Length: 422
Image (cartoon, rainbow, N blue to C red):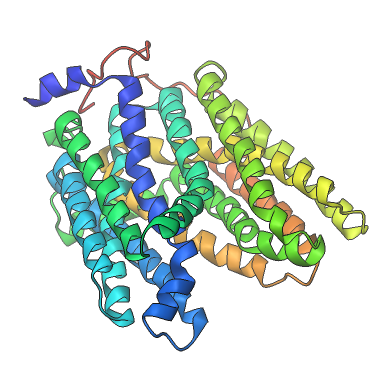
């Protein structure tokens, strides 16, 4: 099937599900492993139980480094070939992890697994190739739902696998899911990068692309806004177990309450996908950010005054996470919008910045935990203030500015994708 026929074959809804599935292959490889870490440590004879965390760390390190590689390659050779190659390597690396005979060997293959998983950053480039403006924000909101919900579901999936099979079969499940996505993409996803936009991988071209990303005001500032707010989210994920155990003495309630808050995030992201084309990215995200500042400020007041209760924590956290979703999903779309010609390396650099920068912000907030919710609420408020400053820089001091972008996407979601290659 040639590219034109493929482009006419895949519709909007199928493309969104396919893109979301691609992103899920990366997310599930972290959260699906968590229940198995104690068993891995025990069976592979690891002396220090804390070293089990390296199974996650080595994977994340691979993802961080791999994004630049795959993003650059996709700008040179096209999205489709690079994405399919990355998924193929993902399947192989996951199977090699399954058959690792020692802990160091497992860590080596997990690093390769992460390198391969980073190839799904190309999915964001594909979205940018196909869409701009509000339609792009709608697509990213729908795929963002998967990013939010996978961390909630994946640990339960991993635990279920452990009940039925050895821990090694978790990697077999990763490989099987990625192989399914590989077959689907091979059959249905067309090449989306027009030949005239392909870059040569000389040092000058790569440096020029990096310079473009770092000097484009809107792209850089919105990426930084995503980074600090993502850091606040990571702080919440890292601290929530301690909060439920030490602050509320309800450790067993954590999974249910964590899932409840994640549901609010997913609902907010879905709502954004329904209204963003009508109201616009700036109106929704800027209003959500201001509301986020109000909710986190209220949370900090409640916590500092000693009035925090389990119900106040869950209610205020759910509200702040929903507002986080409404703002960040649009910030990500606006960060990608100016980078159409270098969408591959642009998505890679933004992914590297938000992943590594967010991890540092989250770690800095998490270190402040001393038996209360004050550090979490205060860190979230500070992240929101910094995000507002970055947004003001991106918008030259004016919120809610009108934005006029040519819509390259079909107006009817049921229409096929016929606008490839700009």
